[in-house]
Image (cartoon, rainbow, N blue to C red; front, side, top):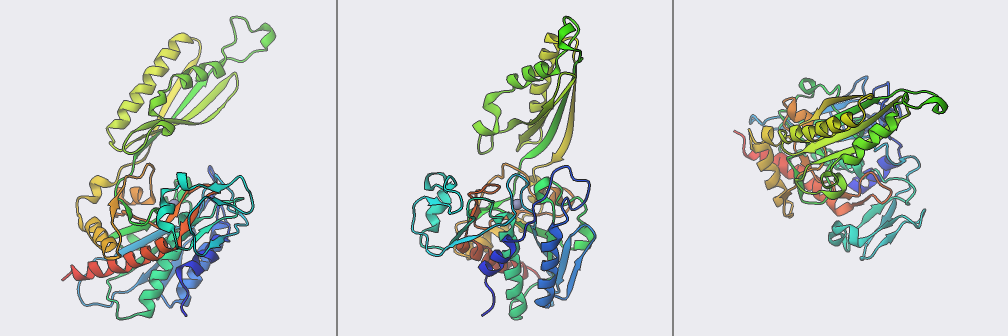
Length: 411
Ligand SMILES: [Zn+2]
């Protein structure tokens, strides 16, 4: 019996591959190589002919075309790292073979509960196999489900030479969760004309648009002096920055918005009397909308500056990523064929906007159109993360359909 997608998934999730913010090295944590190197070995065991890993950890492989037609090279990409927000060490996957509804209390921590009311995707999991963690760590379906799905599809291609395909490119990457998954990714070397990340969630959900994203750093300089002799001299940057944060719009926050609504999100605050900083995210599906968010904060800063004339306030904006929709719609084959492939797998495909970025946003911006495919996972970056194994199987099927649709439409 060839290995199935669940076998592979269970092998990958027990390997700790947590990435780290603000690391000096690349990948951000060396332990990501444990899984990257394993994938290299497994690709070679499957007799995939061209497999490589570089100093940054990028694993690339090619399965050469087995048709005479000229079919564009298609890539499939997933990331090995898990979120820095929740531990990914000593993951104990728990397989529920026939889920029959109801809340799931996780065995290692009774306070971790996967609730039906908070998980609409549990509805389509009735009677199916799902996997959870024991509640003390995340599961790592994001994105080890993607790895298992791609590896299973490759195994099918290698075992069944009668499945026709063009050049198939495989890419496994580190550091997606810290926003650096494509930092050293060599698109030319990868060699795909179009690609797909396998990093979504609910079965049938596809993604061709993401936020456009900027980050904003506000630095307030005050003046520190012993509080005993501070009258009319001290300028307390903690108070100044609090006045700024208190004025940020509460109806334009991640916790009060959904769908296509933009937000302003202060998420890291550091400081003392002499200097304080706050990091803020600007998110909008319309890139022009980012200017409005910036202006909103500029006006707040100007108002607070007037209240505290002796403080010095600086605001610095950095570009993060851009909505990929416009680029993807320039050659609609990459999205049309995906839609068709999902339908052929018996699912009702649906395009949903991602309130975040993907590695595909950056790749698309750099010339490799890369929409995103579901994995069957849910509740990413949390201890209640879980995956629907049927969803993973459907993703494998969708990839195999997609490969053949590209062949069918080529001459
Ligand atoms: Zn992911």
